[in-house]
Length: 95
Image (cartoon, rainbow, N blue to C red):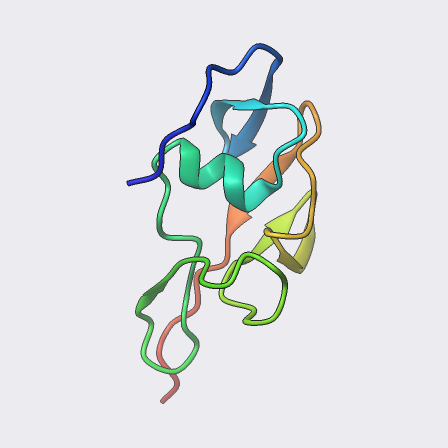
């Protein structure tokens, strides 16, 4: 579980799958979601298993989400913005 080292003083609201989440301004989407207890960001295209951020520096592509209707965004590289709409990328196993 992730936790903050110091209290957040500048909260904003983003939406994950249409659910409001209060996050710290200045965080990346990945850091904000992890701090809110979210660990499943997408499902793999091969077997459909849940995926979460791994490297937090843009190398691994495990944190791909849809942000404001744009798919395949790396959550670890995008700063949060008030009112941002984030959706998990759910893919089923390939046949």
